[in-house]
Structures are given as structure tokens and as C-alpha cells.
Image (cartoon, rainbow, N blue to C red; front, side, top):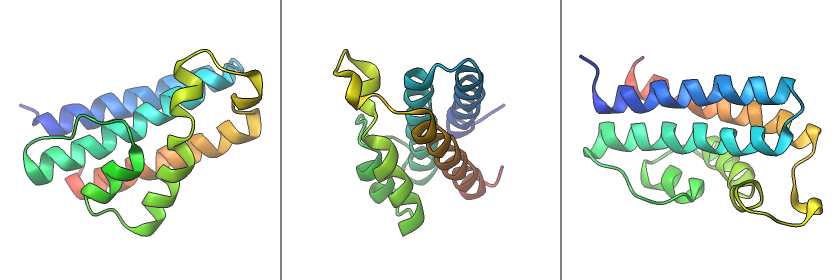
Length: 122
């Protein structure tokens, strides 16, 4: 039977797969949103592993800090968290991430997910 943290990691990995499909279909705003979800769920998995619970927040930087993530992970979170609002709600077109932005999002999300898996020893 899987632990709750493992279930969160699996959901995070599934979101990364969805993000890649969206990227291939040039759905860049949606890709960035899913990248945020990948990282949020991965960080919450780590928090569940460490504390038995997770913070009900969406700020990736705060989540990363709360689990004691190293600086590189926090920097990835800083880059990704700025896309939460513009990818979730109607906003000005100039705030929507570009294809180049989204390529970086995918890489950053994958790095955080791999880090979280290493913490959970998966």
C-alpha cells in the first residue's frame, strides 16, 4: 500500500506528463499552470513525509522553505510561482508565459519533482 506522500508524488508525476502533452500542443498557459501543480504537489509530498501534514497554500517559495529545500529548488520555485495567478485566472495577454518561458517551467518542475523523489527515496 502506498503512503500518502507517495500518492502525492504520483499525482505530481502525472501532472508533469499532462504538462508535456499540453506543451506539445502549444497550450503554453496551461503547461505553465500544470508545472506549478507538479511542484506544489511534490513539495507537499515532502512535507507530508517530514511532518505528516501539508500547508494549504499555493506559494511555492513558502512551501519550499517550509520543507528545508536547498537554494536551487527555492530559485526554481521563485520562477514558477509567478505563473500561478496569470495561468489560473483571466489576465492581460502580456502576463501569459511564452513558449520559451514554458520550456524553462518544464525543466524546473522536473528538477523539483526529482528532488522530491530523492527525499522520499522513490
